[in-house]
Image (cartoon, rainbow, N blue to C red; front, side, top):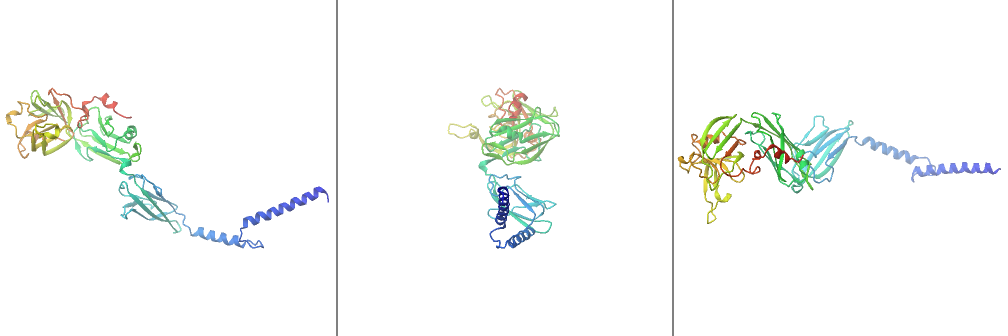
Length: 416
């Protein structure tokens, strides 16, 4: 035998041996010595039978199982592919059920209301495929905590009718350091088409308004899309809502501390002139454009709460039933009824501690008094312009009084 033939036969034998070894390695340890392959066929049959019994429905629960800091608005949902949902239950950790809504095609489910913060929820879902085979999926997640989230308290209220001077004012319960991101998540628009700009007074407050007063009869829409927006390190927004309010007639009132008269205008025309008594020379009333932010048919006014105290530390005045009171500043300036002053004071002398007083009757039940008329014809958001007091102009952030800042200054306070 030649050397070349011998090498050829050895190679062939090696190839054959290698093939046997490979076949043996792939056949599994349970194969019998004869190599009949009965074990392989048996396992394949089992796998095929199991595959036929398994549902093709694929259930997805969000947030993922074990998630923390989940949104209270949009994160919770159950969806299915290659099948339809046959049941979804969602409960708090202590078993309280959460109402939800299944879609018309039975392909998705979501809670009907926003979730609570700092709460652990459990979700169990069931679905079936086209063959009626059932699939199950479970998950648990925890929503964002108050410490890791912020909300904004806003004014005016949804559905309200307000005066032309009413800004949108939002006060956040956490200091906002990422102002641009938060501002981008807030839009304010008017049916009048007026440009609206927002101004940050500090890290917790942002107000929005047009250059001039709102157009009467217009509708203003505030949209908060803050869910998941990072307002500061480790602090995220949770609000997602739309608010609309209506602008009423255009009423602006002008208080003149020199003439001691107030002229009430609607659409620029004087509809009533009312004698007033403004702040005394020692306690002058702020000047400037002020917006009515609250109304009280009767309220208590105690001088001690705004720094007017006597030698004993008691308030220089404490009137428990001030009638027809309308707030103009956070610091305590009101335009209100006065039943304790002589009728001759109004229109002739400035005697108050800084408020604007109108003649009234005790009990606030006499509709014929000037104060009652003004109260009944005033909306939250109406403007009261105070002039000729000799005092400084009210600070734009003291109440809803951003109108005392010109348009360029106002827009300079925007973060975007």
